[in-house]
Length: 222
Image (tube, rainbow, N blue to C red; front, side):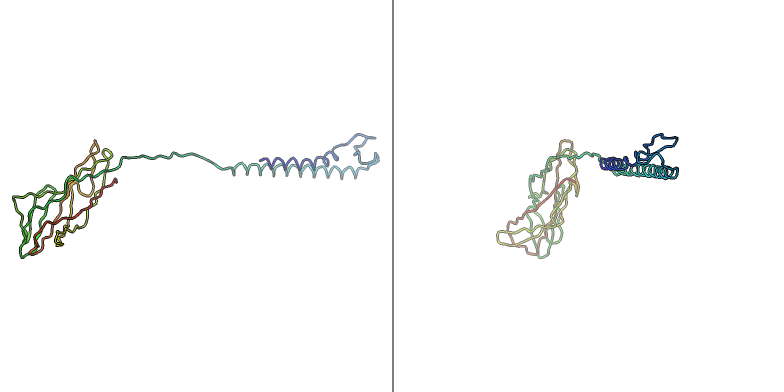
């Protein structure tokens, strides 16, 4: 905008003396004459001067319209700016506390492979050549989840865990399942109980001994 106005002033500064030259007429001896011409200036010279003055007026008018169009274009090319909000919500971290792990109890093996299953409600079932001592109890893994009240969380359980005895013998635990299942929700106080069960594979004539292993359970907000 400043550049356009400056340009207009510059052009007018150059053209103004020319305009004033042809517009500065005086009355002398019954005809209009220019200060730069003698009183005896003929009508042809006067007409030429008048013609040049008309051309200058047209030129100035066109130039003025052109500069106005440039000023209008500059106005429409101005940048537009707006604002938007930025928000963040910090939630409490989730916590998972194991109250106890999975306990299958006392198991007897035979010449046939078998399984022992602990359900999430604590019930035990067997298959194949494996049997359990009913005088000993089995329990699922018990957890307590805590975090943001009423928040939803996902549960990730291991695919399998290998149990090893002090003698180096092994058994495999698989088919892990939980209640709640793959997704849970904390209550209004930000807490939730979670049980995890699984199935133990018992080999034929599985060697005696105490077997143990470590299972990893993960929860996270979703």
